[in-house]
Length: 206
Image (spheres, rainbow, N blue to C red):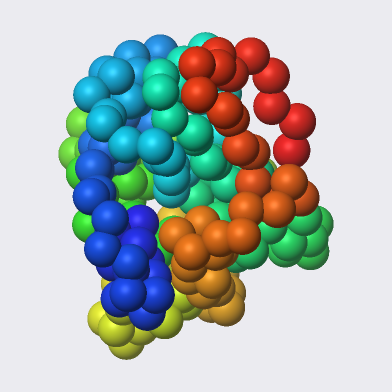
């Protein structure tokens, strides 16, 4: 979400210290939790804003120190950019969608990288068959147009990927408004989890 976060920072004029987490850690929730806790343990501030979702419950077990922790009430970054979990569910109810952004296209372990790996390792026919099985529940490849990147090149690349994966490309309007809300407040309980100092996260209900 680097494009979207930087866009929101520019729009709201917030100049907070920012710490980035390697996106690939999302594939390893336990390791992600350890890295997040290490980052939190090194904080010297009264409040921490996590531009994050619950992300496979990787935030369960995290402990705040002498600071308040604010976390968007969403399951992952897709819902954060779409605006809510409910909106993501509505889109998926219409067409089961695999979501992506320009940042996703730059990722080292995205689904197209996996496709290329499968074709290289198993040959085109078997590789495509493996990917078709993996994506059997999806109908669309959904590119989120957050307004934070040049849509043209991202659309062209997404069209190529959609054709390879035999999915229909869909452009979904999205924004950085939720991220801006995180940065500026207010942090209403309907939209955010707010954990007081010296608290251990034990349960999250979206």
